Image (cartoon, rainbow, N blue to C red; front, side, top):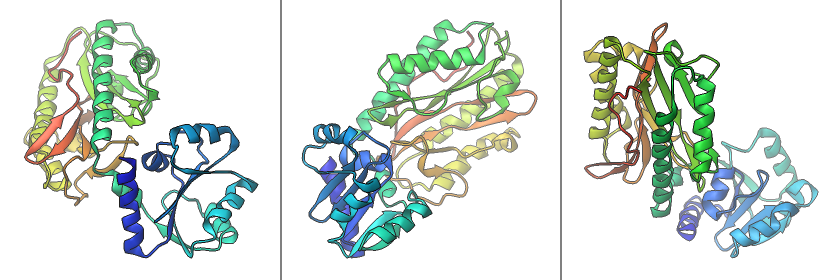
Amino acid sequence: MIEARLDRLRHFLEMQELQAFLVTKPENIYYLSGFTGGSDARLVVSMADKYIVTDGRYLDQAGRECPDWELARVQGGGLDSLAAICDKYSSLAVESNHVTYGLFVRLQSALKPQLSPQENIIEGLRRQKDAVELEWLRAAARVGDEVFQRICLEIRPGWSEVQVANRIAYYLRELGCSGEAFPTIAVAGENAALPHGQPGTRRLQKGDMLTMDFGGFYHGYAGDMTRTIAIGAASARLQEVYSRVLEAQQKGVASIKAGIRAQALDQLVRDVLARYGLDDYFLHGTGHGLGLEIHETPNLSRHCEDILEENMVVTVEPGVYMSGWGGIRIEDTVIIGYGGCEVITASEKGLLII
């Protein structure tokens, strides 16, 4: 799989008449090489060569993880080593979406090749997942489902939001994730009106809604799911709004497929909420791409004209947020296919009262 990814990058180099690509973004380094060590590592990929440049702490690790790559040890802040590799090229692509202006200036001064800023090229290659990536994403989703089952058996009135979030984070690691893919959201009652609210000291009370949005990194790939549950009892209003959000979410899952535009899918979901006068309370897009990063393209929003493609992995997560009352969000992760999708988060979506 790694060689297939490199072949696609080399095809880009050939089409753009560039001699080599300097890769600096950690997620892209992992994607192209499998190397997991060091935030200051660099890759240099040409039509014939592939180098990993890292400091002495990670050389042995790089050799084990990437035995068919040439290794170079960082010297002089890394630029001397890069110069020794890159000065044989006349042109060098750099990740303009990741390289800072300061680093770009230093590279210009230290390296002989003409630098060619390129934006989101490798991210574009990452949009459609290969078979290995899909398996890691399915595994991350399975962990999320197990975490949800466990936490629902434990939560009780009197727990704080922080307790819920900490317990989720613990289970993610216990079940095989390297850590949280993003800070766990666990917000209750009126705090659930904040789409990205952070857990605090508020304690769960009977009748509360509790929104939990979480996921872990599994072999580098992010899980992401959201469920909203009721604590002890659910008011008629909570049940009504929940049913509307669930209907919108199910519409999105049923409609997503290769060939549909992201903005068209988003509109289908919004139309469901609009029928019930809830569209003004839907404060974000329908979903986003998922992979080595928690937020990738495509964005499932009214502004995104991207056409969805097979083996893209995205979330479908409409929500309704009312200040002073609370909020409800339901989120699944799906793999896009022709004629439909595979839902890889399997947890119950009907309103749970625990």
